[in-house]
Figure 1: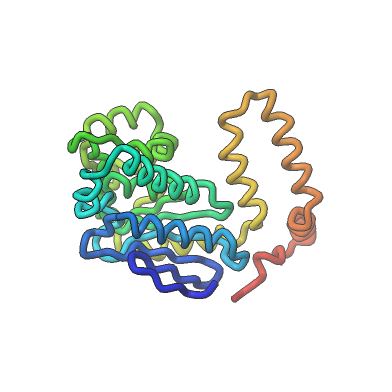
Figure 2: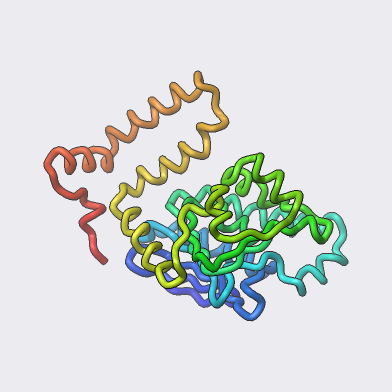
Length: 266
């Protein structure tokens, strides 16, 4: 993947990993229409590039993402319903693109995540946060709701916690966010990069196709009946066992060696 210049984000490929940084530190990486569009483009490029095996999403400066940009909101307040619908659909499409990406995604939460910023980290597979991070789903405080991000946040924290945090809009510490399942790991700020690189290292030892199929499994099975899941999951594992990657992985295990995808060094 070639490094592309964006105005609001930085996308940097490094050793099979795409490091995607929200790059508006002067406004705590708040997103606007331009950032949403650039993130859509970046995730599409990541999806299409077979050399990229994982994505790390983080923020530049002291914050991860402060939600929607205030100047953008000053424009939106004058929009018609149809204009607002179009903007909202674009954000919803972006979150779905992150969530359904057939490659593992890691959110490296370096600081505060407010409102829509929690949508980005919730759409990622694994979230590692600094102890200094704080989060808030504060949309109700300005007469709005966490609409587009709700499918992903609710999947992370469950309905009971979502009811409390959506309705109160209160801000919580990284430890509290970990307790309710919003964060998978919380580490000291100085250990954040190290922990993320450790997790990425583990991801790179897994079969790329197996991880893609795992994400499909996680996406589809929860909405299936047990009867539907029986056939679907049996077909999926049978397909993987006869695939090139499955054959290589099983052979490597039996021969007590690393599979080819884990041996490659770039």
